[in-house]
Amino acid sequence: MRRSQVPFAVLCAILGVGLVLPLLTGASPFNFWLEVLLGGLMAGVLYSLIALGFVLIFKASGVFNFAQGAMVLFAALAVARMAERMPLWAAILLAVLIMVALAYVIERLVLRPLVNQEGVTLLMATLGLTYFIDGFGQTVWGSDIYRINLGISREPVMVMEGLIEGGILINRDDVAAAIVAMLLVATLALFFQKTATGRALRAVADDHQAAQSIGIPLNRIWVIVWAVAGVVAIVAGVIWGARLGVQFSISLVALKALPVVILGGFTSVPGAIIGGLIIGAGEKMAEVFLGPPLVKMFDLAGGGIENWFAYMLALLFLLVRPEGLFGERHIDRV
Amino acid sequence: MATPAEAVRAPAGRPEPASAPQRRIGEVIMAVEGVSLAFGGVRALAEVSFDVREREVRAIIGPNGAGKSSMLNVINGVYHPDRGTIRILHGGQWREYHDMKPHDAASMGVARTFQNIALFKGMTVLENIMTGRALRMRSSLLAQALRIGPAEREEIEHREKVERIIDFLEIQAHRKTPVGRLPYGLQKRVDLGRALAAEPRILLLDEPMAGMNLEEKQDMCRFILDANDQLGTTIVLIEHDMGVVMDISDRVVVLDYGRKIADGSPDEVRANQAVIDAYLGASH
Image (cartoon, rainbow over all chains, first blue to last red; front, side, top):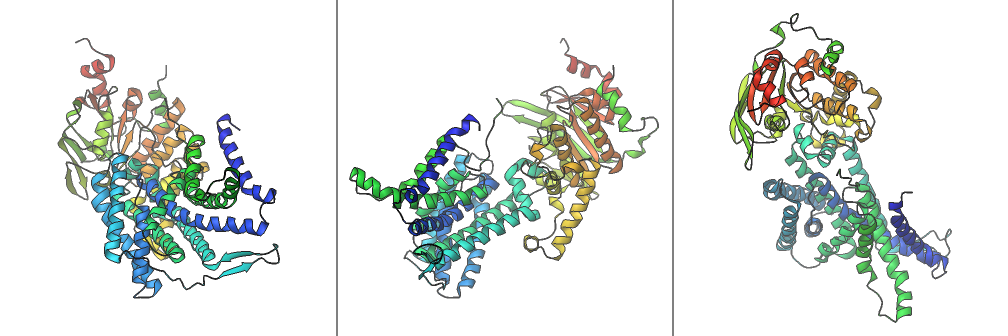
C-alpha cells in the first residue's frame, strides 16, 4: 500500500468498526441492528438517485447542476398533481415528456448562451435555475403537501423469522423502491455501454473538443443528458413522494446528494450509487447507535446526528481522498 | 547518414514523383482565403491564403509559433478567423464559411487528429474508433435503446467498417484495450483510426509524428500514405520536422510569424531563401 493511502485506509477501518461495534459490544440485538442498517440503505437509495442526476450532468457538460434537487421536487409535484386526474402510469409518462421539454428549454436558454464560460458562472446559472424551478413548480402545481399513492401497502412485513431471532420488519414500498432504483441504474448502464448514443455521451464526457471534431453535436448531447437526469429525478421524486409526501423540503433534502458525490467522486456513476448507500446507512447507524452513548456520557440533549453526519464524512473524505472513492485522480504535469 | 525522411521512403513503397505523374491529384476542393486571426494583441495568422487539391498530401510547416496549429484549428472550426473565409467543395457546390463550427467541418467531411492525443481514455480502442462514425449513425435514440431492427443492423455495418480500419492500422491485438493503457505511438494510431472511421474527404493531421521514435515515424508515414493512396483521402498535415514532411508531401505551405512565406513543391520550398532564413535564423 502506498503511504498516501494510509489515512484513507484508517478512515475506512474506523467506519467499518463503527458499523459492527454495536453488535460486538452486545448493545444491540442482531435483528434490530439489521433493521436500522436496511432502513439506512433505503434512504441511501434515494440519495443515490439524486446524486446520479448530478453525476450524469457533471460528466457530460462539466456543469455542477445545483438544480437537481429542484428538478426532483418539480417532477414529484407534476406526478402527484397529474395523478389526481389520470392513472399513475399516465401521469408518469406525461411527466417524462415535461422533463424532456424542460431539458430542451434549459439547454436552449441557459446552457447554449453560456457555453465555454467559467464553471462558477455555470454554477450560478444553475443556482438561479434552482429557485426558478422551485418557484415555477409551485406556481403551476401548488404548494401544499401532496400524496403519491403507488398502490403498495405501507404495512411493514416480518421476514426471515426462521433465520434470525425475532425476524426483521421491513416496508414493502421500501423494497419496491430499491428494486426500481436498481432497474433504473442497470438500464442506464446498458444504455451508456451498448448504444451509439451512450458511446457519444461518454465521448463528450471524456473530451469535449475531440467529440466535437468527430461530429458529435454537443447541444443535442446536452439535451439528452439533462433529459435523462430529469427522468432520474422523476423516479427519485415518485419514490420520495410516496414515502414522505411531496413537499418543498424535498428540494432541501436533495442537498444531501452533495456529500454523496464528494464521497463517490464527481464523475463516477457507481460512486454515486455506493456513496449514497454509505451515507444513508452511515447516518442512520450513527443516529441510532452513536447518539445514546453520547447523551449518557456528556449529558447532551442528543439527536440531530443524522443532520450533520453526511457532511462531516464528506469533509473527512475531502481531507484524505479528495477525488472520492471512484473519481479520477488528477495528476498534473509540472 | 540516413535521416528519418530517407528511411521512410522505402517502407512507404511510394513511387518516385517521376513515375507518378499528376494524374493522382485532382481539382481544388478547399481554399483558405485571406485568413487573419489574433489573440488579444498577438497576431497568430496574417492574410494567409492557400488551396488544397483533391487527393494531395498538403503540408503546412513552419518553426514553433509560426501559426500552424492556429491554421489547422481555423480549418477545423475550433477558431473563428477575424477576417477571411474558408471555402469547401461539398457535393459539387462551394460552401463558404466565416465562422465554421467543428460540427460543420465534420459534416463537410473534414476529420482531424490532435497533437496532444485527445482520445476518450476510458474507452477501448474499438469504442474510440466507433465514435468516429457518430455522424453516420442514422437510427433514432429510441431504436438504439430498444435495439430494434435498423439500429442493430446499422451497428453491425459500422462495426465492419471499424474492423477494417483496425486491420488497416494493424492494431487488432489491442481492440479491447482501454486506450489510456496503450503506448504513445499506438495511441497516435488510434487517434488516426478514429479520424479515418468518419471516412473523411479531408483529413487534418496535427503533428502526427511529434514525439515519435524513428520506427514509429516510419509506421505513421506508411499509414498516412496508404490512406492517401488506397482510400483517396486528401491529407493536410502540420509538422515541424521538415525532413519527413518534404518526403511525403505533394505541396508545402510555409508559415513564419503567422505569414505565408512560401508555397510550392518540396523542392521549391527547400530552395527558397526565406524558408532557409526562417528555419536557420537570418541576420536581418
